[in-house]
Image 1 (cartoon, rainbow, N blue to C red):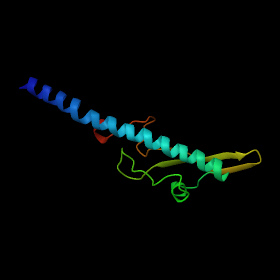
Image 2: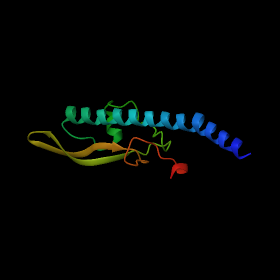
Image 3: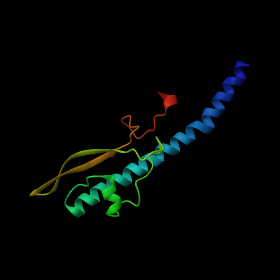
Length: 114
């Protein structure tokens, strides 16, 4: 009986849970890279940092704010700071973006893993 449960658990976790987690992590990495690129382009083009993610959508640097694949919500955490827009001009706004489920990496951490 124990052997069957172990094999069933190994099979389930090996074929279902891990590929889904890896797919979500791939989407997370892609979404973060896309938003970070949009932040850099917006800042360079406008000579000021965006004040919100909606600024990036309104200015068409992003089609829409993506859904965080870790939390299934649009709950990104922007990092604010000073940006040197040019030699004589500093701007305060979004400098980076993180997942609300951020654990210091580009991985989704689910309740069952905590």
